Length: 193
Image (cartoon, rainbow, N blue to C red; front, side, top):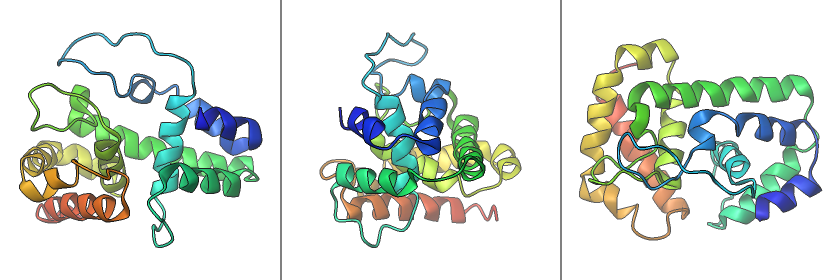
């Protein structure tokens, strides 16, 4: 897999961080087609979970130079981070875990799912937007307003502008930025920060 190649080419503190964070329950069990409350089946070992963590970091920076080629973008990001020191890895770990915990706080077992679908299935597009937008809010604020954030996102999932970004070119720059903007607008309406 692309992540197995990255793992071989770019060892170091960042690669170790990806492996560590990939063991988080919501990441280790990601993207399993299921109904609410069902058990997760076993997965193969192609470092998909590590790629999911990498995706968060790679897409949580400015996308000005992003050309829509997600795999190449993640290659370059991982190569650029291959020489980080342990203290920077620890800082990145805290950032990732705050975003993940905020998402889990708001969405629980529906985390990273399109809430307008009757059959819940996690997606990279929803993962990207939830992690990006909720990772920027202090955890205590997310806990206090989790019901309102959930309701706002559920409403957003049914809106035509948002669903249009989930149909084609999910990793296209325009669709990523549109999804972020739409969810950020829902959050701004709550006057949280």
